[in-house]
Each structure stands twice: as structure tokens, then as C-alpha cells.
Image (cartoon, rainbow, N blue to C red; front, side):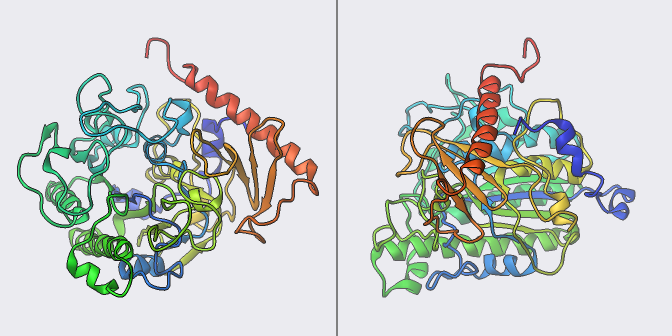
Length: 455
């Protein structure tokens, strides 16, 4: 698979025509991207969790598009966040792993100013743009500066890194370039949604469409829940009470957000997406590590399914008012091209994208992703190889060296228990060749091949 070219990205555009009555009326949907932090595929009621209560996410799953095979762009935090905004694999622009560092220390990675983000494109198209919650794509000042403002956001209430999910330190939040000095009390997801709603209400009052990116800290460590949410799980361990309580508190804010979007209107003109940045923390699920990947193998940092397959929802009444289960492979990298396609906007230039427009799938014109989905990671992998490629039901895990390959058929073995590499060597060779070409493309991008001279 070579890098996704503009022509390939537009290949499905004839099938993915935005409804004529919407374009004729000059209406543009609001875009809301919500993402949890370390929420596993199994950490929702609708995916079968036996204890956790997520009634509002369950309602979203019943009313809109539910992706059974939705993938974070990476098995760790910062790279996935970059993929959401750019439609590109983060190895193309140098974000290889999650940002390290304690408060006061510089970030290891930052989003390069040469990258074109969804906020840049929509701002140029007349949208008001806001970011709220965890940033983790650079610092807000200093040599590693790459704040939401630098990435095209007009309004932001954000943190450089993780914070506790209850009573977060105010100095960790910045409000449009200035550290917050007033005390912040209560559930962190409520504080984030409070600020996001103010932005959306102002934009609606001005009759302007908006892009609102809401990146929660829940349920990343240190995960804490207020007593009223912990009481629902009082018969379980303290870690479980906090973890499930914080997720239920966040779910309540999802419900609040949905209600306000309906009130603001136009109801059928808002795309509301929900996902997580990677799988659950910990080496294995237990009372101390309650996060669930369901029956999937692996967890955060791993390229096994449990590390990268995450909850994926889209509520978009303009397109669908009844539930639809999507079996096609989809990813956070697909946000950028899908939203541009829905708005009838061309990509800003010819730099390669790794995401594809999902509009043909959403409109029922296609059943599968148009190109394979590739991953690369580094450092800790919790036992998985460092690269993988998903092409339809087939998933290759490899280091592209002499170590053994692993091949799974996700249609029949989503838990990744049976290695088909020895019995299907031709498929392994084919997928390795695609992955090698993709990796070379990423390395060319990282060396500056994508950017105009002088950019």
C-alpha cells in the first residue's frame, strides 16, 4: 500500500455525496469529537460489560453508527491524538510514543507547525474551533511549544498532560494561553464539558458552525471518582469503584452534551463522534487494573487487538436515525478525510493521508475499508511485534525482520489465538510487502518529503 493519494481518497466521493438538500440550504454540520483516555473496548455497557453502567454511550450505540472494528491510531496516547487531527500516521511527523514528563518538564514530542490539522481546514471554511481537555501534543510555552492555538483552535481550555479525574490542579489547565488560577472542584469530565458547552453556545448564538474537540482524562491514572459515583459499585474493590465510577461520571457528561446539542440545533446537523485513544492500562485485568478489553487479546501499548481496538460511535441524525452496526475497519485517522468529504472540501495539499473517507461505508455504498490500515509503535509493546497491517479480516503482526510473523483472521479469531502464518505464507508475503512500502512512505514523510520547499 503506497501512501493514500488525493485521487485514492476521492475515489469514493461519487458514492459519498452529501445530501443535496443540505448543500442547497448552505448548511454545515457542527463537528464534535469526544475521546476518552485509556478506555478499553470492553469498558462500555453496549459491548457487554457485566458491571459498568454507561447508559448514554449505550443510547448512542442504539441511535447511530456503532463501529465493531474501530481502531485508535496508536496503542498509546499522543500518537493517536495526532492521527485524529491530521489523518496521518504519527510516524510521518515524529510523534512515536506517548509524551513523557512530569509537570514543569518539557514534552518529548510536539505536533509540528507544518502539519495541517482539521482545525486549520475547518477554520478556513468558516468554523469556530475549540479544544477542551487533555492535549498531550506539546507544551503551551517554551521550546516544545505546540498548543491548541498553534494547531488552529480559536478557543481552548486544555492541559499539557494527564491530571487526576477529580479535583484537578488548576495550574495544569490553561484557558486560551493563560494558566487557570481559580480552584477546580469536582469531576474533571464535567469541568471539561462545562467549558466546551460555553464555546458551543456562543458559536450557536452567532450562527456559526463549530468544531469542538473534547478529550477527556477519564479513565487514565490517577483515576478518581466522587463518592456518589463510587457508591454504585460499593461492593467491589476501591480501584474498581474509582475506575467504573469515573467512567459513569463521564458517561453522564456525554448525556449532557447530547442533550445540549439537540437544544442548540440544528439537531440533524451535528456529527458527534466518540472513541478512546488506546486500550486499557495494566498487564492484565484484575481488581487493581479494572479496565476491560472484552475478550480481545492485549492492552495499552500492544498492537494486539486489545491495545488498539476501542469503542467507536457516531451519532449523526442527518444521515441515520436508526442503529447501524458497522463491520468495516475504521480508525481515528479517518476523521480528517471523512469530515472533509462530508463538507465537500478538498484536502489542503497532496501530502499522503493514512485515513480514508468513511462516507461510502456510512451511506451503505461500501462494506469494507478501501485500503489497509497500518500501525507502527516503539518502546513498550507488552509482547506484540512493532508493526501491524489490517486488510479486511486479515491482520499481520511483524517486525519486518527475521523474527516470526503472526497472521490472524479477525472474522473467526478476534481473540488472536491461532497463528495462520505457516499455513498461509503467500498472504504473509503479500501483507509484508504492503507494510514495507507503507513504512518507507512514512520514513520519507518524516524526512520532509511531504512539505513544500521552505515550509
